[in-house]
Image: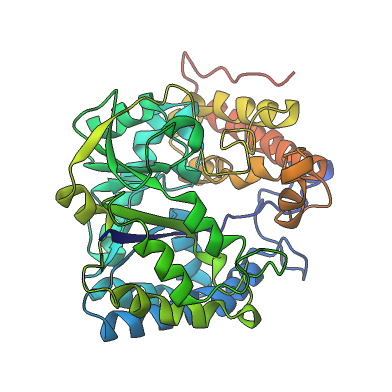
Amino acid sequence: MPAVCLYFQVHQPHRIRKYRVFDIGHSHDYFSDTSESNLNNKKILQKVAGKSYLPTNKILLELLLRHPEFKVSFSLSGVVMEQLKEYSPETLESFQELAATGRAEILSETYYHSLSFLYSKEEFASQIRLHRDLVRDLFGQVPTVFRNTELIYNNELAAVVARLGFTGILAEGADHILGWRSPNFLYFPVSAPGIKLLLKNYRLSDDIAFRFSEPSWSEYPLMADKFASWVNAVNGNGDVVNLFMDYETFGEHQWESTGIFEFLRHLPGQILRHPDNYFVTPSEAVAKFPARGELDVPYFVSWADVERDLSAWLGNPIQDDAAGKLYSLEHQILLSGDDRLIADWRRLQTSDHFYYMCTKWFADGDVHKYFNPYDSPYDAFISFMNVLADLRLRLQTKLASAPAPDAQIPGFV
């Protein structure tokens, strides 16, 4: 029977406040909104912690204590760990309590939940090191498996991650990259045969993350025993069922009233009713299961939207303009040696800022509207570019006080 690998992404960005053109040159506080708006990061973090993280962590701890075979894994972005430390330390302690059981693995990722791989391999590696150090400090673990922002992946990324010393990497089990293959096996990236690839079983994962509370779904209502029977049906056609999803699935995306917590509370027991079923962490899956062949992914794939590509974050003119101008400042920002400037620049890299600028519609439009705290994608773009203009002024002032031969700042057109 197959093993089950449960992975949860835990992330909340530092949302940019409504930063006006009149603030440029006068206020350098980009992320603090003390109003009751949907841009108040403290308020949002505490709300999500109360509705999702704390009750789900409590259930998972009960399950870990009740079922010695049960295991889970998380990746917590550096920016969410920062906010937990500041705004909800009791929630951070509850994650630490899970990790202390020895059966909750913390994965690696970019500290700022960024798109840095697409623009700067050096910045990408730096953020991985920053994230590793924070995970080691907070949880006493050194991650060996990597999960890129929003499961963005291709051959080149696999090769870079392998050179950084990781043994495994997570990706979306999208049909257009798998073809006839099953996501329930491990594979070697064609570019990096020394690392193993774990692929999300998106059908089973999305049954929980998206379809769980949809009354028009033919399988509604979804009960734990029914879902366990679907996992059992993988017998003979897979080594591991990878169930990857946002942690906010529990209590935030699927409210408590939907029964999602009761579903989670009963799921491990139902899966473990079959004597051959068991749970693994990603590093255990990498160590235990052989790769069943090579997988060639020349183009970027992600777990977002129906396209499973980069179009949630990049591709329209405002997204591309914002990202291009942001990363054009890399050399000068790092040259400045100013910790506050560097931290603000890196916070601006968080992928959510570009997600909020998405103008897609049809199948994905409602999703992007639901998760967008701004009145429109254009409002998100305006605030972002105003902040970037102020950041550039600060950078000019800093470098002017300590001129260097290569300190010229790229201009904005």
